[in-house]
Image 1 (cartoon, protein in one colour):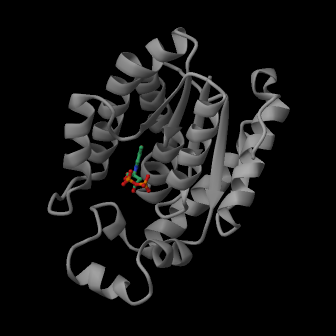
Image 2 (cartoon, rainbow, N blue to C red):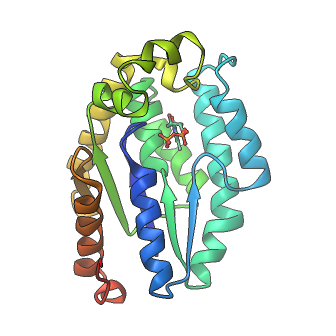
Length: 219
Ligand code: TYD
């Protein structure tokens, strides 16, 4: 089983992933949590290159680096875990590439799809939770109103976060388009809702869709 979480930076994916991981652990469900980019020694090195703000990377270079990290993670960690019957929770997967490199950077959609097929070995998530938030609210959430100018000044934003608000608007619209085309796979959540409410919605969706999770209850 592969469960993925998507959304622009600051949507609150990590909080929801932690809550779900805790609940599944309590129910003795063998789960591993991973994030992209990263998750193997090589993929973590690629992550550093991609996120360090001093690097200037071309859109194609960026696409290939995210894809290289993904190929390592999928082949070395995710596919073996799924084959052993584990539940894999993944913080970002190929929808991030379609949204960020496709809609955000403007790379060709068909070329992107063939690179995605190559780097994922055609692996598809069973369900994807998308946390929707505006770029403005996401930034405010990540850095409080007072510290945002300071963060910008002091270079605290990673390379992707320095792409600007127009970029993030395109990424968000991109996610909306992706969801339009694949409504069955996605569960769309309002990232500004209370975290406990979001957690309940996530658990309920898993229970409704998969018999293995039908007994799952939030406290
Ligand atoms: P990260 O710190 O993990 O961000 P978040 O906590 O928001 O997930 O950084 C990952 C960044 O890389 C994030 O800005 C999204 C971006 N990204 C892409 O542009 N393309 C991709 O394929 C992936 C996986 C991530």
